[in-house]
Length: 95
Ligand code: SF4
Ligand code: SF4
Image (tube, rainbow, N blue to C red; front, side, top):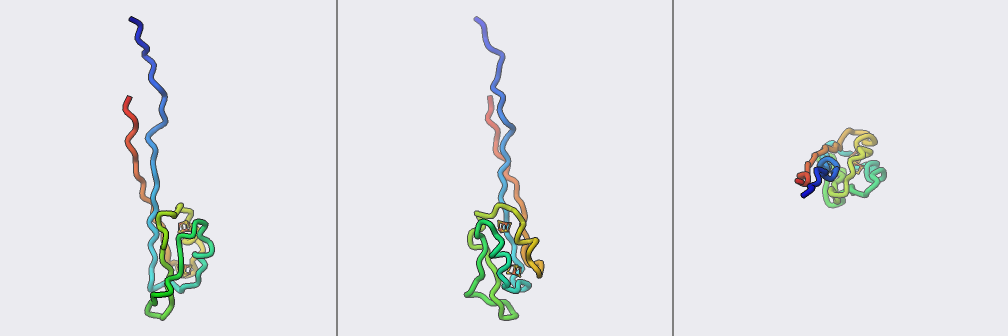
């Protein structure tokens, strides 16, 4: 009986990315620039919280929506926000 030696050509295992948004609350001036420039509305000013300078800091209200564009990092005048990438590898399909 003739058996095929062919196997399907599959793409390499997909790497998924997640991003962690870190905010230095004490350093944040609450200027809202990062809020305005975030394309996915991850950030908001926390009107319930104050830092030691009596300013409302920013918080990440929808961290799962972060796409890692780093606009917030670039725009922040006080260098108070950082985005770290975490790579999650998925298992490939065994054939
Ligand atoms: S990296 Fe981009 S998507 Fe993520 S919080 Fe900053 S501006 Fe928003
Ligand atoms: S741009 Fe920087 S200082 Fe302004 S609200 Fe965002 S994190 Fe705070």
